[in-house]
Image 1 (tube, helix red, strand yellow):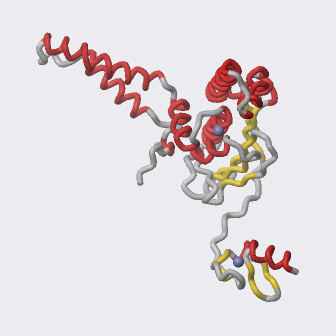
Image 2 (image 1 turned 90 degrees about the horizontal axis):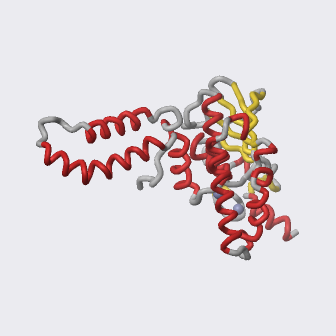
Length: 265
Ligand SMILES: [Zn+2]
Ligand SMILES: [Zn+2]
């Protein structure tokens, strides 16, 4: 099945085609061929031209990062400041490290959170849970380190202390507890939503050094994911990766079975 969101592989650097195409469409609509009779042109321009030119103008006004963010929302499920942090951090890292979207393990991310931002990273940088190039150390920090294996260069992108939501939007941050707890009034919900929108806009568009600290770091040692032949768990009979299996009196057990055995003894 075709995914409903677009692959952002070529979106960070190149949307020139989209821009050129939109300009061509608009040019054609505003300056139709003289071969078309005047009355037909007027009618045509009053109906479709207006609508199409409105749509293309909107596309032209949207920046690359906005389009990437919208696609990421399709992947993540909702729009939130955390996702905006992940999207922008991945865009910055790809730019700084001159890296494309990871097809394999060529670009690796170490995330210091397991929150919404991680989905922005997965979507834009292609560092995903399934490929082994996303490592999560949940320190509860909005910080992401990236390693480009091809060049050996690494960068850490972190939200500046003065740019966190609680620092920039204290009012929205305070009512957030009530909103998530389901006790917020409509006015409080509106305050929260408005501050959320401002934060999304800030993380996506603020000057780089205002929102994030970007530091080149020594390349972290990250072993590549191993491909191993499975062993069979002696208790449940299911295949399990040897590195994850527990050796028990000369036999292999999967983790749940070994825990069940331990609790029986
Ligand atoms: Zn989210
Ligand atoms: Zn088992």
